[in-house]
Figure (tube, rainbow, N blue to C red):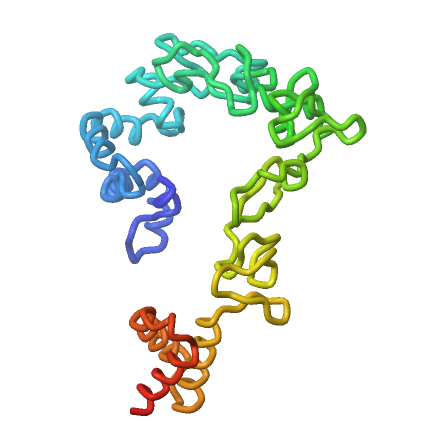
Length: 308
């Protein structure tokens, strides 16, 4: 209908065309143009749309040619009055009973939808939105509080993440009880428990603790560490086997070997950095058995291999 709302008869006689434009709105020509594109803008159920249009073609044609001036809403005329398969908005059931709510236009207090709204089905009971509950969806559900309320409207907002189930206002001060990982402070309300300070065994051996609101995370130490306070070989409590502390960082023989090979391949032999890394990884996987002989032996072996 919208696509052809500004359409007109084709023709070369402007005066004749101007007279005919008055009847184009409800002409058979426009009806044919509409039917050619019928259901093409339906994203789902296009086949069902065509089947319904075909089944009720005579009624649609009757409305278009004879009734659209008086009954401009095709949905209301066809689906509600003639076929009786639909109800007006905010009505439900066989008799199109008004949905419960503070007014016919505000079903379920505008905080939900009544079951069967707009159809001849359903029982009219309110299905409340997430934040609401009650027969007419006029109360706040668990985990929400009244942030606004008057005689016609109620607005429920989520409690702070630290609150357990219920609260009276925004923020941690509004909590009636605290969730796990939080404690009740008389002045601040629910406050975070730093498990990394209060529980020294919060994480397993050779990992360190990172606090987060209401919880904590355990992260494995660097491979160079035997115990650590944070990430990286510069935060080791002590160095792991085959690593030693140098300039505040736990370093191992293979780390020095990597630097040596990488620099040699990249600088002395003009090998691209990405290829140098791949070559090192390949060589390293084949030289692990030589590790007991020491870094200098392995370095010499690789250097001779490269030069050869």
